[in-house]
Amino acid sequence: MKLSLGPLQYFWPKEKVLEFYKQVEDWPVDIVYLGEVVCAKRRELKLEDWLVIAEQLTAAGKEVVLSTLILLEADSELSRLEKICSNGRYSVEANDISAVHLLDGKNHFVIGPHINSYNAGTLAVMHDCGATRWVMPFELGQSTLQRLVAEKPATLETEVLVYGRLPLSFSARCFTARADNVPKDQCELRCISDENGLPLQTQEGQELFTVNGVQLQSGVPCNLLGEMPVLMDMGVEVVRLSPEAGSMNELVTLFRDVIDQKHSAVEAVDIMQDRFAQQEWCNGFWHEEAGMNWKENRLQG
Image 1 (cartoon, rainbow, N blue to C red):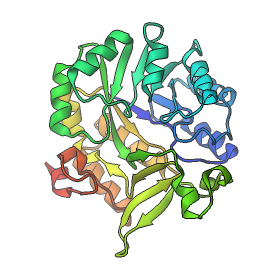
Image 2: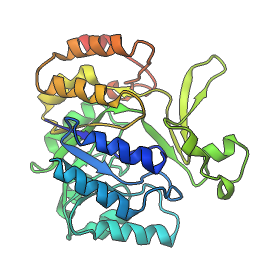
Image 3: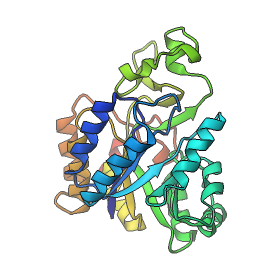
């Protein structure tokens, strides 16, 4: 099983991004996804900058995949998408069906989690277009994954997000700008101040959502560390962690230790709960319940 680091969801200053991926060079991850996927206005890094990072990570022995924007709204965004899809060196994660159209029959690519891959027929069509790996949509659960792994084309790899806040929706409007009562066109890129998004709490203080520009995420990260044995038994080839500010290196190491059998999943969960005692998690979608639910009892099974 391989370990991947998904595309950065948040808007960080360029120097912070460069420093982050410099650290990633030494982390025990096999695959790194690069690029802006949330908002086209976030231009701290140009495509050329992402390609420089890609070269450095490749030299460090990582497989690099360029991720595409999820919600395209302008011709300029389509032009950027075309450049990514025709980069000629790196595989591409298609997060919009327009990217699949551009990649069809030309390059091997990854079906991103934002394409509705809900049945084996869809996976077969994507495989015929050139897809070599698919990322399970975040809202699917264990039994659906098990069925699709059994029914998909044999050479199509499966990837599952095992840690990170879940993207729930995308909008043409900007939630961060609205929170500050300013128009989207005058947002002044305020989301750069929220390194892990802007928490949105209920009146009771529960972290219900995370506001991230035009993206709305789960309030707390999804955590499937305790489900790693199940994912391995299913034959899932890749598990993904979504980057966040903080103790990302520790999280990567915990998941790698389970993959390498240095710790059992139960031991790793205990370690995680000790190190991140104040952190809450969710895993409801995995159990085909409300996504915000957390079922700790399953971790010991």
